[in-house]
Length: 527
Figure 1 (cartoon, rainbow, N blue to C red):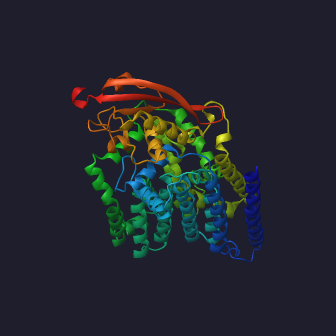
Figure 2 (cartoon, rainbow, N blue to C red):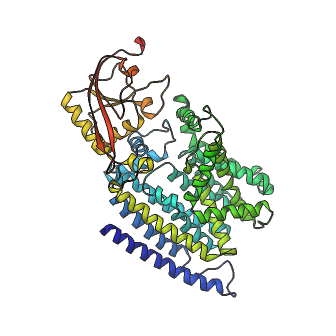
């Protein structure tokens, strides 16, 4: 209750500061003698830094109090940081490098330190959105766009964990700012900046390629003059050259590792499975109202409708549409053909944040924007509190979003005790989830965890980097959340079921745990 009380106090202080800025802003908007490009002093970079500082402080405190265990993807990113390379099975390396640097400099591998990267980078992303909005429109547009993005429901949720979307959005927003500069003047400085942002974005997540796709559509359908000037200038050589040089180590890594990351990206698209899923497409579309916020996404759709009717006259409005809507449409198509997660269209929302704010400032109604902002601040506090009280939250069935991030420390403790009691040489798992969580929460370099590769090629990072082989230490403690398959047990000359148990993963739900003792691995030659 004390945490909830202080969270309420913080939200009240934050919103009072925001209200004072809004009141001053409204007064300026009512003064017809003030030019449209100038706003009040409070709506400035200094005022933005104060508000973003308050947001960051709240999120850091909430992270420190967060009671959830690392999600298995987060545990995997942590391991990447311990094993620096130019690429990994599922993603390019930038997030691993960042986490590795942060944990090394802090001397801590705690979930708090690992996740701290997220709210800090989101703060810098908001600053780039401010710069892009200011360049395209005016300072007050950049100000409110930055606040809008920083308080988006998706960003509030993302700030409680760490994912590859976090650095991707940072470099995407930096590229958007550089592109805005190039729209005014094609010069060397902006070209270098854009090349760096594209390269680092691609080294964060391949979804950065959508930026090139959106820019191409913009040049083709909206601004062929700029496209031709850019393509026939030295700037394009600088942009493409820098981006390629930064990405080159990852390309070489992929070539040396059987194009592992590219293959995983293709597998993620899942085009080999059954196709045409209109309900999945609808589900993805509706999820965007939660990602961007219901009022803001509805506004984006309204702007798109006006564009189709030929009423969107502002050239920067149309430019921002090309850097947002095509991404959503592509991922909707992916959802229709196979599947898509709600966050896959995340790169649409830096540009969309600037666009909807500009529309509200010029056409209104401003009160509706304030309602949206208030709603998002309330949701941000609720998301943070939910992570703090997660072990006490009891939701029915599969509705519990915290089931997957609770109980893993206890799972590892039970496994560690069983390992030491039985005098085993190593641990074997056949699920990426279990492998990731055990490697992180066992916290003992003397306990080797191997991944079982059932198919002809690795299916994840662990099967590629630590597969079980003839040289693996025996006897083996097999650990899983389900019964071992007879096919797996048949690969060993001796197999013995030890016990079945469970660890609490919510007030009423437990995570099953199965133990087997295995020895005498037959090896692939005997299969």
